[in-house]
Image (cartoon, rainbow over all chains, first blue to last red; front, side, top):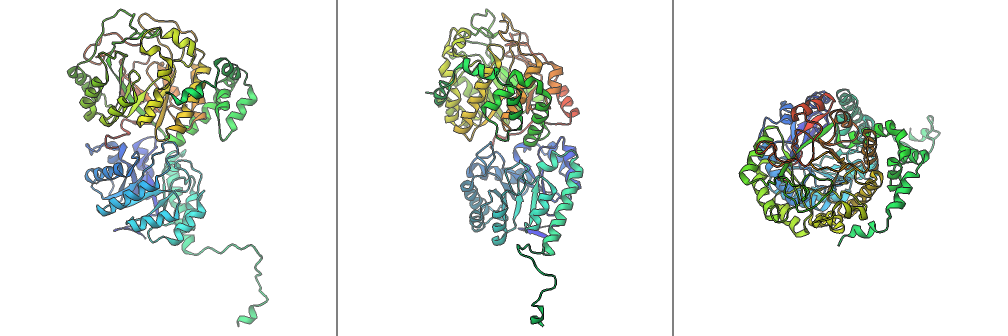
Length: 254
Length: 369
């Protein structure tokens, strides 16, 4: 079981809601994934009308909404957007996304830290989307973040875990859950993320744009479970020299 | 002063044109396989040599677009506020020398039009006027933004180029996007097409994206009017402009349009014809050159073309458009800027999009952002 703030999750696969061919297909894929935490972009939701198409299809008791602030460019806008989301969607959870760069959607570390400090003070459960920066992760912990969400590679790129060296450092020293977000393009990437000890992964594009999003959602579910199981079972170490199966010195241990 | 002007001056129209027309199939194949495509690749992709590669270009464009934008299409609609214009443009129905009745919508009339647009389901509106600085000026735009902002999540504007401080005044009032088409980058012929009015100042228009970037606009739209000059060369300059702007104003989003000259009252025959195959090639070339830029298709294009082109790189589409002030309800008979081609209703277009396996996105922005 994964615990973030006051919630526990059986599934370590978090999902996104963008890019699907229809809201119905999105719903079917999310249900197949057995995900319990789904991000939804504030900018896509009609905050005044709760009969909004996306929200209707997310109306399942096991699905926790994680509104994201995609589109904001600084801490001030992010705090305002989070407050509106809290009021409209009745959740104090927020995925903090501050990317002033619309081309590669690179998260702004300075504004993200400032917004995390402010939102944590206001009682939000903050999950910031960040670059795979180990120092920033520690600073975010100090600021009161509930988890960190470092990117594996540029968002929507499907390039996998290009930042793996830094992800391993983050995982090794983090006191809060580490959710690897962005760039996971294949179930094997998700499995790898779980094998190195990530607490969860967040996948959107790779499922939404797949030839069969529902089947791909199932594939990701299985990959995340396999990766986590492998991590818990402790993977055999890789070594650069031969290890004899009948060591010559074993008699000395007797 | 335009920073882009300094770059623009380093290029000569005839040299660029010759370079594009000299590209061969090897250049095209290199462009298709190059993981980091540049302007030379773009030249190859819009060259006549690339016409034989339309299917692989379309497949690649489709894949790249889905990766970045998913299976979605954004909906928008123009709201023409005025057909008053002080310019003479040889290709436009609003041209000063076109003796037609002029109209600028009053606040009450604007709200009547807004009501119809909202009932169609729209949340993204594009405000359009002619260039009449005495009547449709910055103060008029401020009043319009105040009036309509509560009703739309995303407001775009396609009006005369303004000064930087004017944009800085309008952005806090809810202006998200400004479209400014250069019409043509052929500097000498630009003067022939715009003999009178403020628009005849080529360099002021060329510097508009710079002023918008400095003002901090959220998104800007670029393009040329296809039919005025050699489209391959004009579109190369658009790509050059886009590349410069993306590097300089890196917090701004960009969109491209590719309007083809359409019939209008008192019209000019296009100097250069572009057929559907060539337009499809251009759309794919833009997408392969730039994976992030938004590509927009209007009701200028035919039903059949729009049905198929949405899978080849397009990310936003208009439907049910009227190109005259008051066209939706107030004054349906007033002069159109140009004739539209696809006359299907927004609901019919939405159904076509859904049938193609795409999600129709009416809202993808919010006033709070």
